[in-house]
Length: 178
Image 1 (cartoon, rainbow, N blue to C red):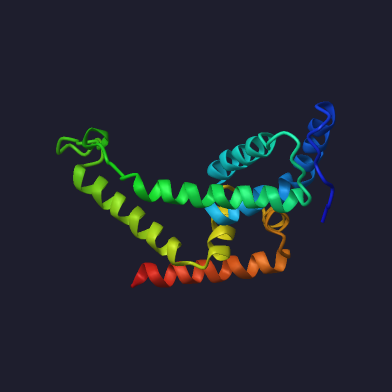
Image 2: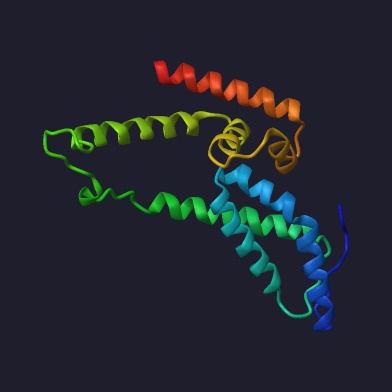
């Protein structure tokens, strides 16, 4: 853990110190955000916003624990993101569904709706997983990370990644057949 105060008195010095903090903590912050969000793109967006908020620290402010400060910013951003996501209704455009004639040259509306229902069911199953199991499974299946990369990003062992993947897959199979 780094305990380097960030001083905003000399305009050249803080930029270097903040760059160092961001470089030192970027992998852990990114792993934390992926763990909390389960999504690589959202994690990248919120990491960027956390960096920007750190840069906007009021002039002459001293940050005694930059790592804690950065992670508090990120945690607050995750909470804001979750609240915003809950408030935003999910709208499906009927025009986006392909409707075919009965010749079978495209998805029928019924098949498309069945497909969407299956996706919703899978999303519900994933939401019921413990957060770490879900993060490991999504990093592997959706984002294509190796077990070693997942272990590094989440700060856990490769053996634990394998165990969580197996348990998450078993849970999903069990719930899918119910």
